[in-house]
Structure formats: structure tokens, C-alpha cells
Length: 158
Image 1 (cartoon, rainbow, N blue to C red):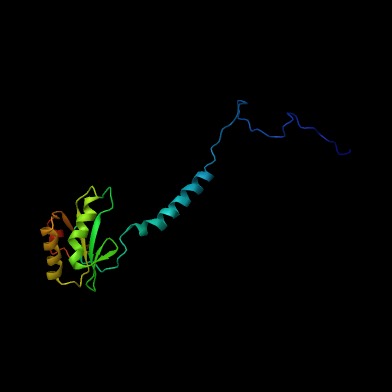
Image 2: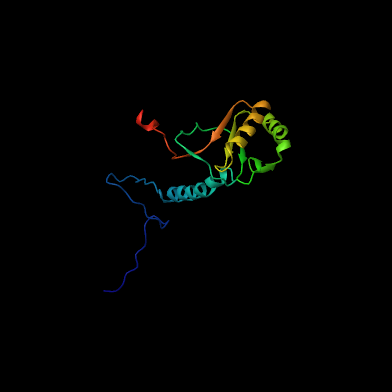
């Protein structure tokens, strides 16, 4: 009863699993796919907040719904609580607003402009800016607000 040395048959040293019929059995290993998808999910979770305009303001709350999604990043004009005017994230002097907007809008396919104003900005100032935009040739202006504001009875009529 000694130990016996057995030689493997086939010579390559690999083992193949065989199904009932004796043919090869194919299996899909989904672990690498899941790993890649989780990494992409983390990348998108980190990158998504960076895609929004980064000027911090306190938008007024309304019951209005969101506009449909855009193909191109919308051109936004922001009125901050301290009175500054910003195009996207770039500060602009009041006197240079319309010429700068015209130059930026000339390079864009979409002519819509989104106006974001902090809730503490007086209504008069917002209307002055909107009037200047209208006089400057900007006719498609969307006012940006946060959702969750008072419906003033609108929700009962639906």
C-alpha cells in the first residue's frame, strides 16, 4: 500500500467540465461586468452635481413643473443675493450684460435663456433685468424656481 503516482491524461493540465451529453459547458461570468457598472455608477454620482450651475442662491419655491430636458446646457443668467449678475458662473457688470449675452448667444444653437434670481432680490430688480433682456432681443426667457412651493389651490382643480 504505497502511494502511487498517477499521470494526468491530456497533457495540458486543464480540467474541462462536461455536461450530461459530454459537450463543453458554457458559463458567463458576470462579476467583471458588475464591477465595471458599479465603477461607472460611482463616477456618475460624483460627476452629476458638478454639471449644474454652481452659483449658490436661494431660489423661490413654486408649484410649477420642470421644463423638458435640453440637448445643450442651457444659458443661465443669475441674480445673486448680494446684487451681482452672473452668466453661467462668470460675473458680468450691469452695463456689459446685453453685449456679453449677445456674443455668447451667437455661438449657441438654442436661443432660450434661463433667469435664476435669489428669493431676496426685489421683484422690481428682476423685472428690470427681464425688461433689459427683452429690449436686447432675448424673447425666450424661462424663470427658474424650486418645486414644493404653495399651490394656492391649484392642486384641488386637477
